[in-house]
Amino acid sequence: MFCSGEVRQRDFMAGSDLGRNGKITSADLNYVFNKTDKFETIRDFCNYAYFQGDTVCFSAKMNVPLNMENCKAYFLIDNVRHEAERVEFTGNRVYGFSLAGSILEFYYSENLNRNFESIRFPLEIKLKVLIAYDNGKIRKETENDLSATVDIK
Image (spheres, rainbow, N blue to C red):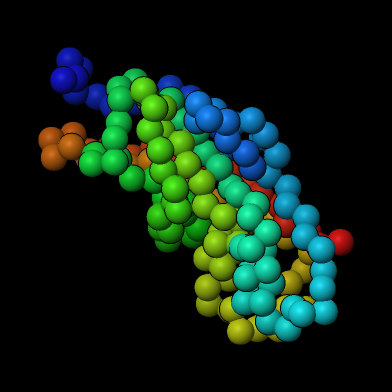
């Protein structure tokens, strides 16, 4: 299927919204949530953010078509993998997302029961999107850096 035997990423974009064709329609990675008096713990805040439905999206064009049998996508924070909640394929494009609340919960996984007031806003979360390809013969991973900002108003 592959003449060169090499899988390469041609382009990558991240943002907060995807179009039907898998392309990023908003490259904004700034998330602002309304503060409520219901935030006692960091977990409370993560749950609130989750149900707001904001997404951290990615879209990558590859040199070959991929599919769910040979490709997975992850968000990485401190080299720990968190599988993307939704991954789709169209032609040579792989795209998907996770909810911002899920990313926050992943980011704070060791501190979810701490007091919400311990978070210093605005919060910058540095993460990577990892696209892993493995068809049994060829194995390739690409990492893409991104940074999201979370704030409270």
